[in-house]
Image 1 (tube, one colour):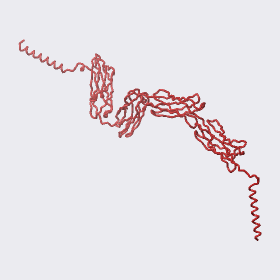
Image 2 (spheres, helix red, strand yellow):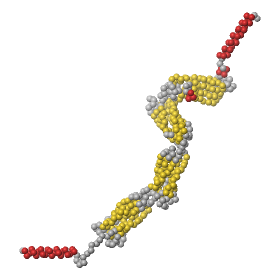
Image 3 (cartoon, helix red, strand yellow):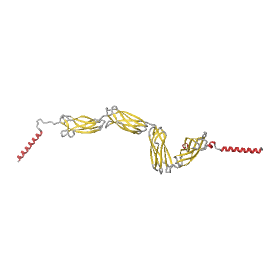
Length: 490
């Protein structure tokens, strides 16, 4: 071969080698070329979500019919650029796609600013040979200015283990009604009864309220999230949510009892249930026991935190003036039953009537009038008080006023009475007064002696000649002398 020909062949070989290197550099990786997994479609609902609203992106992942084998879908994610970790949502371990099969995956997304935004759907998985594959698919979304119902919450700080109420208000600030309204409340470290509520429609400019019973399980700052889903006037299904901070305190249980004797009326004690804890107590049963008395039972529905409730326990079958009383309050707090006790000594002085301030005065008719007060010196009321003069040899009642019905006299109170009597003997110095009354249904009788001072009798002359007769004689003599002098003058 000539030198010129060898040079031409060498040059041609060099050109072929360089061209082969260039093509090799431009060719894609073998994994990407041979991957048969694609995202065939991705949609979002609603089609024009509002800024800040949560909407759903649904993607269809397909393993092509000509694939060499099954494809394991490890993860499907939606990424909202610019939001960092908050803009990423994913679903894991979704299963295996055989050649020619597909699956649909729905994931939530939120865009904070109105305008046109491009989201990415990402699929991560493995081929039958164990080769890792990632597929990316863009999703373009038009986000509009937010016009949606508003959510507001009212609640007090929670207490671990204690049920409390959270009031949620849905206010439709739109000019049109929303339909198929669904409100759901969720939270971390809490138990919520009936998390979801529904309503057929809410008119424009109207609002509605919902109450949820929430029981925290852990102290500290927790979160409650209210999610509202509804259909607007255009038929779009929309979702909006609000997250509220929820402070939870450790449970503080402190119940005390104050017991006081009731003065007046029937024997009783007043029991005050004092709740010094930080949550309400419920189903309170107050009972009492004593070896010298019987006490009734009282029930209290609930006592709020830092609050009190007072009940009355009637005391019967008293066998002592100062019986020892043990009062118990059984109650429920945070789903558990507890008991508080208090032992005191009661002071019960049964009602007793004394007749005080007695005055005796003689009347023009020769009888005496007795006045005074019937005083109750006990700590319980008395009924049917009656005062009368007891008949004796020299003393007896006189109409009107042979007896005086006083009626009821409250504890530590009094009522007046008045009686008429005759006293036959001038040397009688006492008048017996009898008082009867009822105490707790039992009749009691007492007798009190009223002091009587008879009036003094004037002394008579020694001749025994009555002064009235002497005056009459003198009058006759004077008249005779007067007539005699008139006749002589005539």
